[in-house]
Structure formats: C-alpha cells, structure tokens
Image 1 (tube, rainbow, N blue to C red):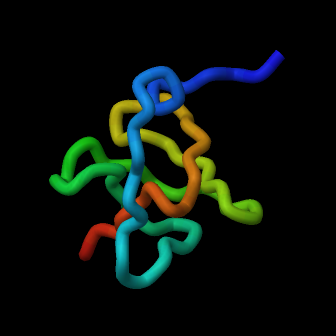
Image 2 (cartoon, one colour):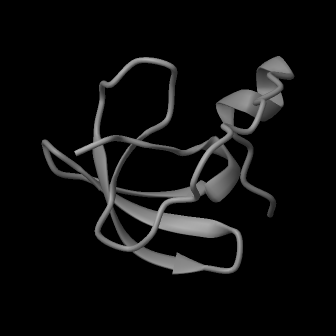
Length: 70
C-alpha cells in the first residue's frame, strides 16, 4: 500500500529551496518563514530525519528544507 501525502491529494508543487544544503545537526524550516523549526538528526540519500522543537519526528525530502541561520 502506497502512503498518500497532503501534497499528493491536493497536487501541491514544492519548489526546492536554494542555498547551502542542510547537514546533520542543522536547524531547518520547511516553509518561507522561520517556524516551525526542526533539527536534522540524519540524512539518507534524498531524505532527512527531523525532530521538531516541540517533539515529534518527521521524514522529509531534502528539497523541501531550508537551512536556518544560527
């Protein structure tokens, strides 16, 4: 069974963020603003394992992440 995402259902297109790609330990965001923030725990191929500032883990394509300045 294939998992369907919100983006799949509504046909959303996510333009990749430009700039330096995130590394393990970096703080990142998935949208144009600075919230919510996530810490990169691991990177495997084109996916990142993230942990939210309020808890909760997520796996997200690297192309959807924007590295936050410290």
